[in-house]
Length: 344
Image (cartoon, rainbow, N blue to C red; front, side, top):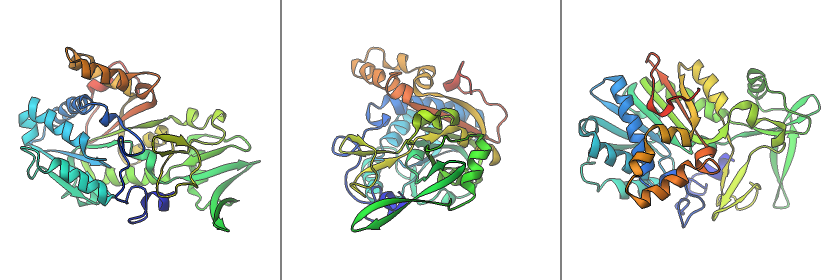
């Protein structure tokens, strides 16, 4: 999965082909309407007030074509000018093609000169910073381990090649972390059940926490908490592939030309986040998060926005599928607008 998605120049995210939008393979909430970014700007404004620092840093991982950065910064400039002037925006992007599209979109925008920097790693931010780390549909694209329960033994699924055909092999886990992962979650897979383990997400979260002095981590993605994610109803796991807006479950075709994803385990992000001093601020679905931030009011009198809001908050669609997790560090019990009346 790592090779298919991230191999230099040939991987899905590192090639120069169009992958997002009408000419690509999928849409995200960002592509529906700028109102999504406007709502995140509302939440970021409150976060900045809570932190009370003169400088506010936003670090976005995997910024796609740059539309979320554009919408957030334009909203801050329009409604919270002082915050906009004190904000630095960092984009962490591995794909050279996407990075160029982001530059083309953002660098010519009025008032953005010198405000946005592109980095290869969060470690390149000048010092432990105050602010917020944002990701939208990032964690689902990290390479995962696939395991299968065989009787009382946990096996890992490996891939080999014979006669130009991929085939799977079951063998011992490549790392004891895989068994430890399920033990810590108190999850026991059923005999024959396959599942994904996203160790890369845990490494990423630790690296983010080490770079953050005070502030928040905002993760938007599709997935479940552990009991639902590993429920026997998902006997074959959650691997999904997207190619030209068609969904499939075979990662061994269109290699390097299709997106490969696995649903996010939000329980793991919470538990391993606490190990890294990231405390859960709130957890809910996208529908409740956007409602709480005032998306209905923001769309009043604008038919185009109102139609977009229906798509963003639909409980059978994006509103229910996507979850929002915010974690904080170096702050005592922050109460965020996005989680009003929502249990964490």
